[in-house]
Length: 131
Image (cartoon, rainbow, N blue to C red; front, side):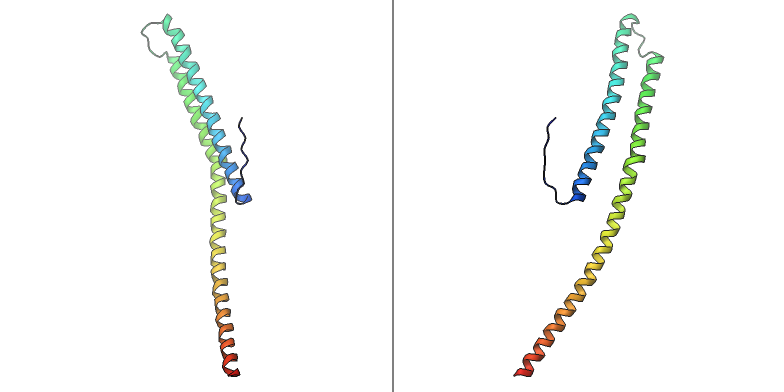
């Protein structure tokens, strides 16, 4: 297993990247499990196909493939419900906090600009009084 250590900009970014990697791994494992079941069913059908020429998919194989597909879909929905949906809630909360912080920073910037202007005026008044 290759291991790469990279510096991230922040702990939040590292956490988010780790979360994304974890989701990819879970999805990959689920796809592999589904593919293994389908492959097993296909191999079983090929072995039976030699004995039962021309009958196509047997009803039990069709039912097994349908069941495997339904289980795969249920697992994907469960991952979305239990993992991705809460993560999106967290992202929305972080976005809201950032919007509030942006407004606070804009207000602070206005205040600082006003203070700068006040200091400039006072400095100009002092210079005029000295002349």
